[in-house]
Amino acid sequence: MAADSAVMVIDGGKGVEAQTRKLFKVCVMRRIPIFTFINKMDRDANDTFELLDEIEKELGIATCPMNWPIGSGKSFKGVYDRQKQCVITYTDTEKGTKEGETQEIPLSELDRLTGFVGENLKEKLVEEIELLDGASAEFDLEQVRRGVLTPVFFGSALTNFGVEDFLKHFLQMTTTPLARKSDAGMVDPVEAPFSAFVFKIQANMNKAHRDRVAFMRICSGRFDADMEVRHVQGNRVMRLSQPQQLMANDRRILSEAYAGDIIGVFDPGIFSIGDTLCMPKDNFAYEGIPTFAPEHFARVRQMDTMKRKQFVKGISQIAQEGAIQIFQEFNTGMEEIIVGVVGVLQFDVLKFRLENEYNVDIRLEPLPYEHIRWIENKEEVDLTKLVGTSDMKKVRDLKGDPLLLFVNPWSVGMVLERNKGLVLSEFGRG
Image (tube, rainbow, N blue to C red; front, side, top):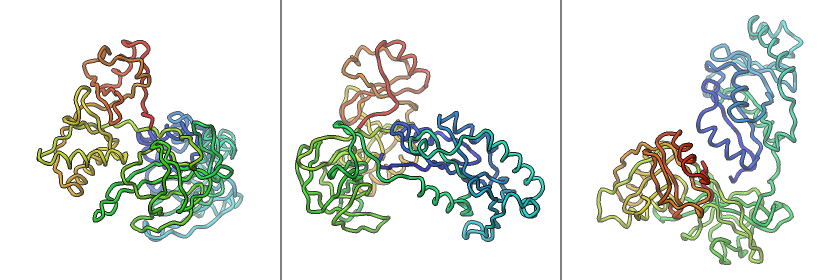
């Protein structure tokens, strides 16, 4: 949500995966440009045309190949560059550590091409280029920037082949910072004064100081470290403390920043993901950040009941960062906590952080639920009278909003049929 464009990396052997679909939905919601890199062509890969067809059918976006692979796996010899109309071959000298030598061969010099890729691959390439030129979409930068066409590049990150070419094209095709939608209309990044929104919060970045940093994307204007800004959701005018840029473990204090920049500021516990900051005289809010639907759920129990305070503080702070989502049983408080995550490794992260940062041991009890839905028209729905299914569970999130958990995907449709007028969504809105 803090980005102006997205790079979509597809595994050439696996095609479009579940997490790709999930991230792609957010890109579609914002209509941001998507640039595709099909990776691992140095391994056995799916048919090239089938990969493109899968992207178009699964994700609903047109594709425009900017280069074309010659073989795959051990027979991967390089790519055909459609703009230069030449073949770029490579010799993989030290796999995984150093880029091999590359050589450009014009397609017209077929004899030289045969010497590098072999007769079979050369003939296959010529046939595929003819089919490609007649069937693929034409490159249109305007459609790319509207998010309806994705340029596609093939290569191998392991051998570092095709990556530099992709990055060069990416820099040429991407835009300057885009205008952002707010409840007062679109906000121009150049003409409008300073504004920003919080997209990430990280607690205990420096364990010794127990610091908490709010990361914000500057959407418009110029930020000055001495200026006062309005925190819209908190309805207060304030100065942002310790503005800094972070790269890995390095921090640098900032005096100024501009639209498109990412800065981190000290958070005393007042910021939440999705909060808007603007000039004191302004008062508008950027659209909320969607919450990913968790796919794995577990009930959390603390091992030492005497550490209840640390447990609630720790799990609440980690949830505020967006790394996990926590839910309460429908008619209880924080006595029973259910944690939802997108990937199972996040359970390990939660356990490790609670133990190391808050000195709390927990036990996780896996739950069978795999699907979650937010109730969009919650004001119109009486949850006590909701007709559910045997595998449905009612919960509330930290804001008190009602949600439904399901074991089976077909139960979602059944609940909608049984409760006319009910509106469910795969995404929560911040």
